[in-house]
Amino acid sequence: MKVWDITTEENKITYIKTGIGAPVLMDVLLTLGVTKCRKVIFIGSVGSLDEKIGIGDIVIPEFSICGDGASRYIASDTLNNQDCWGESVYPDLNLLDEVKNITKNICEENNIKWHLGRNFSIDTIFAQFAHIDTILKLNCNVIEMETAAAFRAAKIANISIAAIFSVSDNAIINKSLVSGRTEEEIVYRKFVRKNIFPQIILKLFQQSSLNL
Image 1 (cartoon, rainbow, N blue to C red):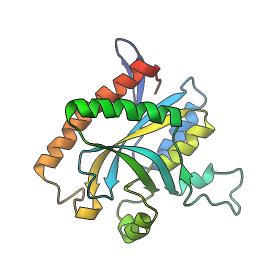
Image 2: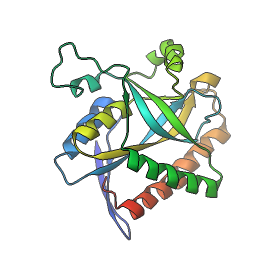
Image 3: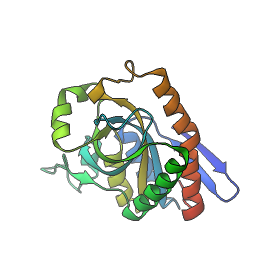
């Protein structure tokens, strides 16, 4: 894990790079619950399960379906006969609306595509492919590894949270992390991450005085 304190003209921001997977992000959010932090924007990569959601596009998840194991440790006070598998977990709805509005405006100004996500959070990159048909039947259009646990942990920690995803791959049209993506798509994704994401985040800070 790495931590940076960033000062802008209007805000002081803490940026935390947690690493991949639900357990590490969950522990960070639970730890933040004993600090002054009360609002978090999670920035991550996501796989598309919809041919209309392209490489480099922005996705704002409206909910995440729990397909991870870490969530089971915080879903209830006991581990006996308690299973949150398949439950939908939601970000803070007020913060979600704010993220959607800002993203919409900035993307329209810059001709960038963005989408609302119905996400499935899973523990594995490679083993997911055997279950894609089942996940599609849940009406999910994206897949990643952290936000179901993150949304649940944030609620426990009394922290408002929303997420912004960058599409890294698309299993439906055979554009994986290692093959199938064009150079144009890779360049587009890098541009969005480097130029559009900062605009969205800074605008959120300006409007809401967020502390990450």
